[in-house]
Image (cartoon, rainbow over all chains, first blue to last red; front, side, top):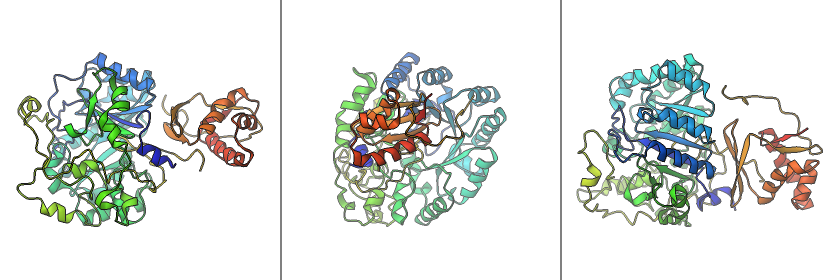
Length: 418
Length: 99
């Protein structure tokens, strides 16, 4: 059996685990995949977080991708960072840079086993601040300057690709080079508040091609979180395992301890359990009903007859779900246009699933609690059938280089046999 | 200090000499074999057969690499491919020569 097939059936522990420490955030990015803003009062305590780290150490999860919200606004963030590193669970954390003053930058430079990812969604303040808010460009650049001055080796600049910034790819690369950083670009998902802006922000078909061509020509040292595997249907497979790892090798722990199949799928349909329940995270990972279903063999559904199915695997589960498309059909950004008809056919009566988890400062308080009426999922088939997002058997065997928040990280695989 | 293992010159792989699993790596058992994590380079890699896992973990107790391969019960015809895999593991720091 090929390695990717083993991945399809799930591993003893996740390879790539995202852990969002808080829903609190100083920013209010329009595309926030976790609809962050306000702290959730049920947030895991410092001791509970340490217990999760203990479990991860025992399960040999060798590093976590920490995010939020803005993780550094948790007063115990630095304590948890040290605790995790001391327990052999390395940390990559994503931040908008708000707390990375010269003192913290120097502290990070002294710390082994930590990676820092600064979010930036425009190569200019004009483009960035529309999405991430006024002043956020300057905050990110200042953080990069502080890290560079402190001698922190190679932070990452993390960019969500949008219709407004695809033309700035070369400029992003130049910024990364200037600060000795590595560029990381990822796909915009219609998750969280991203659902509200997806129609106007997601790259056009022409821009998807432009992005693909740029990655093929210039992307050798650019990380992608394996998030553009739907573009592999253009021809040459992009580096990465080109599969959806949700619930199989990837998952998310949210700030209140809920475990979801992937960071882009914060919705009850993809909720596997909670780390506070008996047996903790390990029990959820190994025994949850949802994850067991995700680890079943997949059929490919409507995409199976497409000649490019092996390349793109039907694309991203979350992208389909949150645009109201069937999970066993094409990705909304299918490069062959196979989803165009289904997208156009969505009418006023189409109910597009929306997460009940919303910590936006603009949302009513306790919105989740108040939103307990049933959520209609009419047009979509039972969402737990993951047809079409399976890591197919004949997929690319090229190693992924990066994972970060998405599928598979730094799988410099292929050291074994064959 | 960060990134102690950025670049270092690796000696040629000599299966006639004693090796061991590097102190910087951890192995996590999986159905296919094991997942390897190198705490220095922060790279993940995979040992794709249980026998290869046995070879890697058994190196320490054997006088050389050939003996470790034999002790793991690897058949004669497969041994060249195991030697190639182990050369790769030496190159990426998963295993190292011991004194």
